[in-house]
Image 1 (spheres, rainbow, N blue to C red):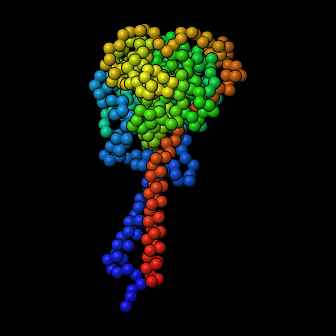
Image 2 (tube, rainbow, N blue to C red; image 1 turned 60 degrees about the vertical axis):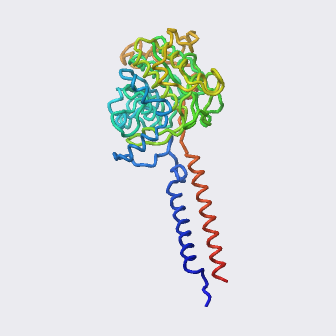
Length: 434
């Protein structure tokens, strides 16, 4: 008698292959990132694929994902400086100081978008991610650790729930307030296409009071043109572009140009996310705080140095990548915390990036809170600006990390599995009808 199916051993082999095919399919579906599911994505990033609970596995996964720490030689740098005593202002969407990685790291700040706000301090999460990259705690193996883990964060909220703001005067007020509250480094992971006299005056105010100012160059995906964003292109500001994960290649979404000064890791990063979780992020928004953190390390190690000398030290010790010397893609190169802390660099006293031309004070007034509500002169002391000024738009340079390479791998695995399964089914059908 002839049987319709294959002999026993072959039948078992077919079943094993079919089971393996189903397993591959299930595994492929299981690792599809959240961004591939047809639901509205978060404003900034997709959740990392582990739960925010205090387990050794979760902690190691988050920490081990921080490739930028190895890239920048963080452990070696920490032998010399951890940023202790330095205040870094994060002018952004706010900072959630209750996040486990930031508890005790965040100073009282100000909300210039909604001063009476009593809800969460960072409704977007962007500023919290930036703050964690700068000063996330390093007292255990849990969560995100910052490059300057003993620095303190001064939060200034200037971005709204959509992670943008249309009035440069708000950002200018934030810079001025941060300077008056003792910030030694200011991080601006935001920008726009148009210049702003008010923000230029605020930045000049910061320079005059010995503050290092760092800003991102911007992202192609959120910009109408490829020009380096403002205020990154303001003379004297360290304009930071970004690199791809684990490489010296420029991140594909980064804006670069003649104003570019330094580069830092910008993709494949894991950041702190309110209220207590983590997500994958990418963008020059997250390269800039790594340079700001390096400035904090240097300011802690050499408290006598002027802001200009701190800036100069970052430039001359940068790792030259790309074309030899300074170029429009990478600027002076990849920021190098270890070299910045240990190299013998002559004093220059002045900021080598600053043209020393004052932008004046057009459209700029006193820091917020300097005029009393019942002060008869408060109205004339308030911030004002031209119509052109109010059309300036700030936005964050952080984007959703959509895990494109992961989805490509997953898609390939699914295709192979489907083709294999189909081939097995056709073969079995033919054998059955012999």
